[in-house]
Image 1 (cartoon, helix red, strand yellow):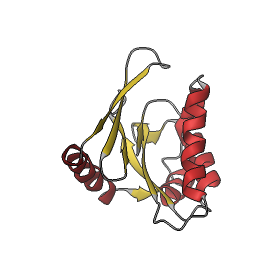
Image 2 (image 1 turned 90 degrees about the vertical axis):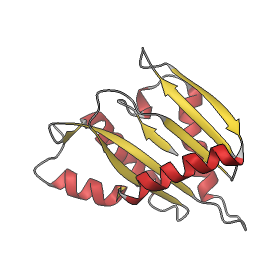
Image 3 (image 1 turned 45 degrees about the vertical axis):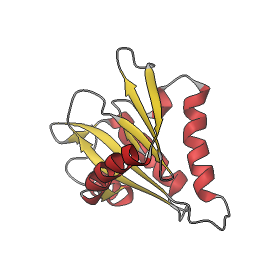
Image 4 (image 1 turned 180 degrees about the vertical axis):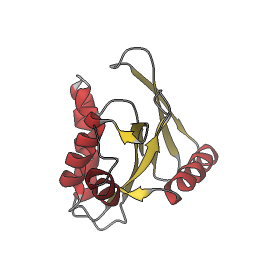
Length: 151
């Protein structure tokens, strides 16, 4: 999964948005016999080397809410573009959900495609991004305590 937006999820008014984030953590923390896992890329907007304070505060709270879930990992993508990124959820081996924002803050549209080949392309892209990321806890410690702490 990815979350690369200019605003933290707490700034969206729909109940569906809050439920989506809660459901992912609940699913990852369920006691299960399967090999479930969730990896989330969180794009944190930065300007002049400083993370957005609202997004940073949400990321810190998200880390507190999720650090005990062994099947959940989050990595940080430092995001310097002044626009939201393409967001995706890759489910099992064949379902890709793509989300596109645009215009007003509350707007988010998406589509899903169920196709193993389509999935393989996005999974490769996700893995490429993931390999270059810092774990969320490491990022928070380094940025929150260093000279580039949020302003």
